[in-house]
Structure formats: C-alpha cells, structure tokens
Length: 362
Image 1: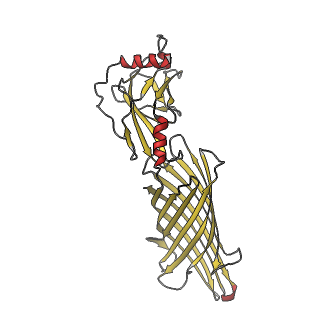
Image 2 (image 1 turned 90 degrees about the vertical axis):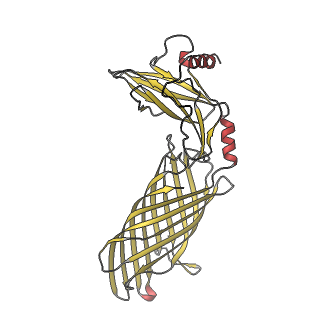
Image 3 (image 1 turned 180 degrees about the vertical axis):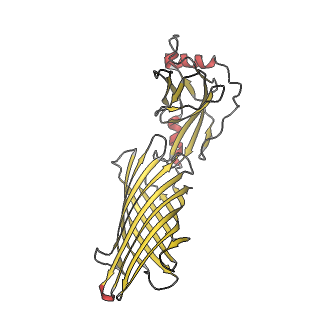
C-alpha cells in the first residue's frame, strides 16, 4: 500500500508532456476505450532514493484502458493499457515489455507504450542498456481496479463468429489412368480460400467450414484448364484439460470435392466422405498464434466407405499476426493428396497440391 501511495505522489508531481494530446488513439476494433482511471505505480521510487532509471519519466496522465473482443486465446477478451513516457539519454538504449523490445522514441525522447493487461496489478518491465552493455532494470505496476469486471463483461457477450478470406499460390499435380489411357497434368494456379468458425454457447464446442476453388491458372503442362473445388463442414471439441497457451481440438465432419476440365479428357466428379480433423494451437505473449492441423478423409460411395487406400490426406500450418486485433493477417501452408482406385471400371487417380497463401480475418 505504501508503494501505491508513493507511486501516485511521484506521478502527480510530473508535468504533462507539451506534445501530449488530451486523449490517445483507440487501439483495436472491439468494445473500445473504457473510461476508467488506471494508475502507474512506481515501487522502486517509493523510498525516496534515486530510482534505478532516473531518466525514465512517466506522464502524469492516467493510462487509457482499452478492451477488445479479439482472436486471442483468453476467451476472446483482451485488455490493453496505453500510456506515455520520456527517456532522454544519449548513447543509451531503452527496452520494454516481457520480451524487452527496443523502445522507439521521438527526438524529444517521448514514446507510447501499449501494455497487455492480464490482472488488476500488471507488472511491466523497463531496462536501460549503457554503452558498455550493462543492463539496469526497473519494474512498474499498472493498476486497473476493475480488470475482472471488464473481462467478465466481455465474456458475457463474447465474439462467436470468425471468418478468414485468403488467396494462395498452388502447385498441383494430377495423374490418371482410365481404361488404359494415362494422363499426367501439372499446373500453378491462384486458389481463393474461405474459412468460417462459429463458437457455440458451450465453451468447448465449435462449428467450422472451409472452401476453396482453383482460380486463375498461371501455367500448365497440357493445353487444358483444370479447376478443383473442395468444401469441408465439421464440428469440434476443444479438450479442456489442455490449458492456455495451448489448445487442442478434435474435429469431425464431411467433405466434398470435384473438378472441372475444359477439355473433358480427365478429372474426377463428386467425391466425398467423412473426415477426422485434429488441430493444435499455441498463443504467444504478443497475441499472435500458430496453429496446425491434420486431415484424414476416407472416400465414401453413397453410404459405404471404400477401402482405406481411397482417401484424402491433408495437413497445414498457420501463423496469425497480431492475434489481439479484430482483423488479423495470417500466413498459411496447406498440403493435400487424394487417391482413388476403382478396379471395376479401370479408373485410378492421384492428385496432390501444395498451397502457400495469406488471409485476412473478419
């Protein structure tokens, strides 16, 4: 308590920066700024002695608190605190945050910090590096009295619908033997992709949909244009025993794929069946997250599953940048292979694709 009082007294004695606006920018596109006073507490300066980094001066203006509904793993709620400070010391480097990233300052030494708040008294680290490489640390505390209330309010109306729209460059290889005639086809093409996820009221269940179509064909080995379409519908259960920052979900559903070839000399039609689709996700301190999936889909003929040599195998990885944002960018890599062998009609087919792409989240 004495630290809190001393910290507030120190902050109140500082002048407001001349360049400081009355209100900072809103960060994110979620619920928005919360008009609730927060405080910066300076424990190392509470005993009246020289602080560890005396050149680090904090604005007397209270931090602005921002709550967003986002893509991150903490139930879709992120609380951010924005505040300003000044550090002017020639030849010295200032680092900040859990990962101690260099602070970018203007020519007057003024900078803005956006801190990820995970409890009502969030510790935040600064470090000064002198020309010899010596490191001096100083912790502050960002006090947000109503943190729990903000998070609970956000979770009462959580974001449930997410959509990604992307486009990738695909390398496609197709081999077919049909009544003794062989066809080998390969191409490079642009492939649009849409992914949709809906979180059910239960915290562990979700619905998902993905669809893609081969769009503009850039290059091909034959004088033919081939388009491939895939649709996937599934439901999933997130395993509650696995805690953040990790998530593991077991998903299952149905898939459908078909192809169109302008020459009509090769291709497959109306292939589908059940699918098993486990996923794993890891969230990082920045709010970014990485995920991976594996897909096993046996091919079915009406209600019967063909032998397991007839199947689609798929796998992919995804990295989402700024996962705390309501509209993050992602990079993804998808790999897929389909095999179908029907001896009764002397038809055998194998197709594989590798797609590297980027997507935008809504």
